[in-house]
Image (cartoon, rainbow, N blue to C red):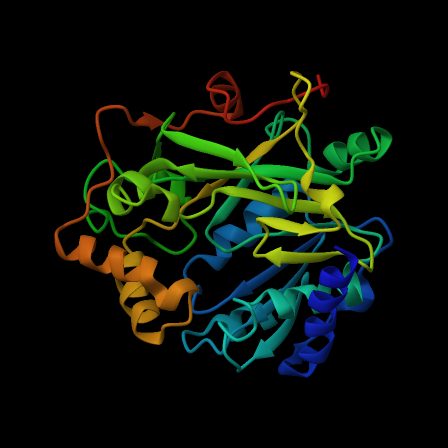
Length: 328
């Protein structure tokens, strides 16, 4: 897969001029800092909680690409002392849904660092996250010679209709989107890239009931000890070299893993789904957003009798959705 990896890296290098520096503070990045890489568009209302959440978790610096927002996001991010900001006016879709931009920044600034790549609606949860910061996790991973940390995307949703409870700036989105599916997941191995492919949850049962194989992928490898030759291939679902995807034990044991609590389904999603459907900048001509938009017209409710309310990482481990592996 070396030629494939070099091709993706070449794409990122050729498109680096699409990412224009806006407010850079990269000189502040220290040798052992944990870095967070983000592409965002019109997420101003989410940003205060998102940034504080990851600051409290242990992120030292944020490297953010703003894809031509018009809601004040860029102005807000410029004022954050731990944020370096770039502006990309080009097509999100043509940039492989932003991954060409992120791969360039990872290549330029991420080498040698533990790098966390997430969306503004994703909150990382890992074993002992309530008592141990990210620095403790990555130090243990370094000592264990692990270079990538997997996390299942866990869709969160409210008990009632999506729009019933307005989301306020700075609010914990889990105060509203507090429920998730404890089961209903399918998993298989991707023979080419060596990663596990996970599908299911509320989006699969609500929008892809007749075509479950087309449901969104829930497997991610968001935290990596980055090296210059590395690339993400499809969002953070899989990476190259393939060793970054081999984050599971095939001999019956367990390795450490976490979850990305996916808080997409808030009241803000109603306007967002319409905008993204019209822009057509997402995968498969925004087919997924078209399904969302149709559901929203019918007062979409994702909650069902088997839903669970989120408690803590221990609950997720008891359900088999995350694992502490050997990190006791």
